[in-house]
Image (cartoon, rainbow, N blue to C red; front, side, top):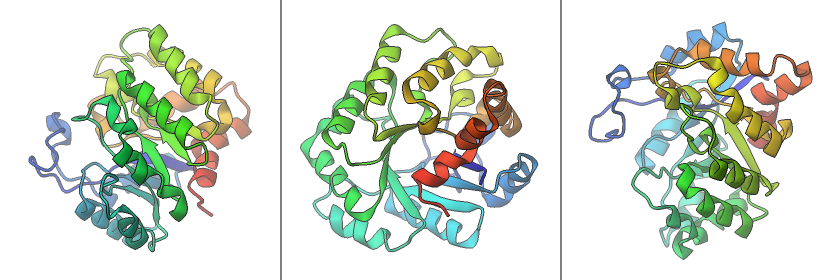
Length: 272
């Protein structure tokens, strides 16, 4: 099954989505907006990912998933620092479309991932068969490494390659820390968010050095494509997001491409 492992929907509200600073995406994005592009790219489904830190949004995303067969799973948000976290996870995980949770980090320090309260919340995820999606900036990678090392049985996936500056060559520190994170076999990586970080002036070759690193560190078996649509529209079209990755892997086997473009996502998120 061909799966886009990372995309978003929202009813735009400038207060709730204050991080959206590109006028192009300051509007509603819903399943009917994405369906034509998925069809053109021959995708059979998506993983819908949270974009707001509320359980209300998690409920909204699960409702969309129940109403739209193209959504094969939801990555929601719950308060991992809460003393009631186990009860929250038990309630939400009754819905089998919930595949995991994520915490956005725009207002956080990297150390939040090593906070005992947060780690206590993460320790409960495996009980309910849920993954944790790591969204970090490069300077927060040490915290992500510490988290992955502490919970070797927990399934993690790194979003957006940790958001490196793709307008420049990969830094030595980013490469070293990606390699260290990938040394934990419980961590996978989404090839996502490239256009979101690139801006308007980019060349496909700009992304190759970063892709080279994650292929070397994670191997084909732990990589999955995600468009990051509609955030990616800041840098280019949906079809361009897909083409960048398919062209990069064009010299690989058909089996490799199938893994990156959906096979691994289906296994990782337990999608039949």
